[in-house]
Amino acid sequence: MSGSSPAARLQRLFEGHRLTPTQRRIAHCMVRRAADAPFLSSVELAELAGVSQPSV
Image (cartoon, rainbow, N blue to C red; front, top):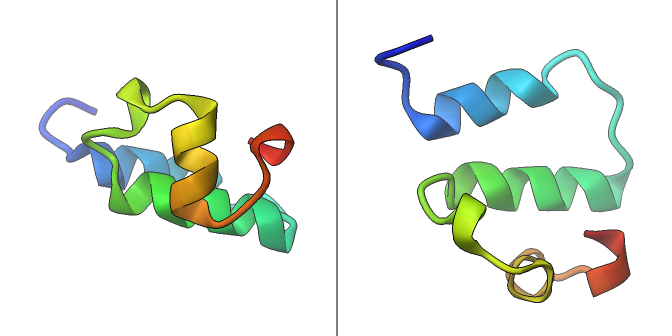
């Protein structure tokens, strides 16, 4: 897995899984912000994804 981008690694995690629309929004946000995602709080991620904090 070395050499692949953080966004590519995240995308592979979500492939083959059925996600709800809310989960999909969170996943897409995490892929778009892959470099920052590990450092975001659940509140920040929720705001960026446009979902509620408990959903995160």
